[in-house]
Image 1 (cartoon, rainbow, N blue to C red):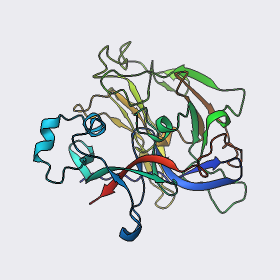
Image 2: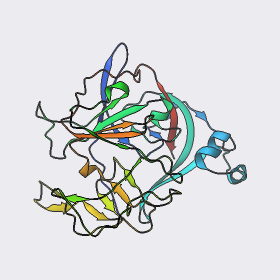
Image 3: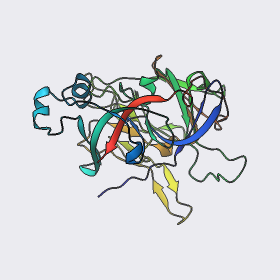
Image 4: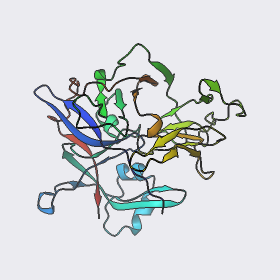
Length: 302
């Protein structure tokens, strides 16, 4: 079985009108849900979503007839995280619960039930610190996420590109990849438009990821990007060919995003990026996330 090691938990800085709180969470920009640890059974209080409800039917993309075989009558789900047919899966119920996000896996996708969609967050940014950053040093760079008006460029050297949307996979963040450079030189042998998003959105396009460390290309020749494992001294290529069975031409992994401030203007449809130091996590974020409990869909593990 192929397994993936997620990058270190991203520090999400949040604040309210009365307090500022920093906590650690995993940010997944391709996930449409918020995953939280279930409380102990005596404290477990949630509102079950019926299988035949419009909410469940639209979330799971099923019909009312599919619910006839569901004995519990609840909105049961099966989610598979896989790569090339191998991976892990989780099953449970989709429920409605009011809770405070601490130590969660927070979905930042364009999906209707993601963290940013439910709170109407129009802009967010993240900075992934290098893997060899020493958190014990006072001046070390830490991964950080900023929300709302705090998500702004930190330098005057930023660049921007439109955020694209696939009709077939509308929850993902796409950008246009026009070519690849090595040491400032264009890599030859790549046909023009090789990475373009197809008209129907069923293939092509560059998909952004904050969980997959490796970058995958549909057309890979002699590009060399390496990651050094300080523990073993080994250097690993961080670019691999994209499996032909998947609909994307390219996935931009986290290793190539480290040390870069990535700013997503969701409403404006624009991605801004810059090589920079981590934005200060202590900045006030104009969102009352901690003081105002988040109403979200909880995936309850069986």
